[in-house]
Image (cartoon, rainbow, N blue to C red):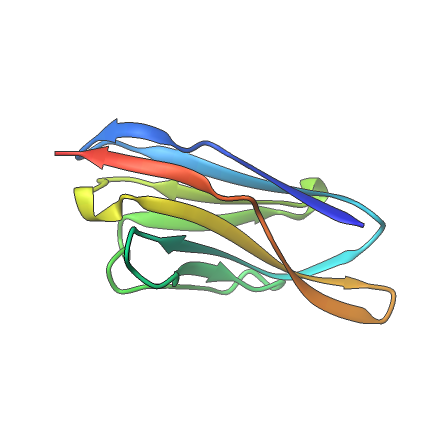
Length: 119
């Protein structure tokens, strides 16, 4: 099957930067859309950024101009560059990949990586 491995989270001061990565491996497959979500304590999981197979992107209003999503199709990896981080960005960040294996299409989630921004 498919495995997703996230990396890049950590503790950073406000105004700092982090880069998250999410790499997929396993059965031969096609990756369609890729996205990053986040969930803060006591809040619902929310979409942060998404990128289509064609490279079109969209962002939550709260991160526009600060975060950049990108993908490397050769490495089956999606990235989230986070700049000018704010304490309100503190959350567990999850990647979600829309993957097709043969004729089956499903969403696959990463294990989550903690991002903590101190004031």
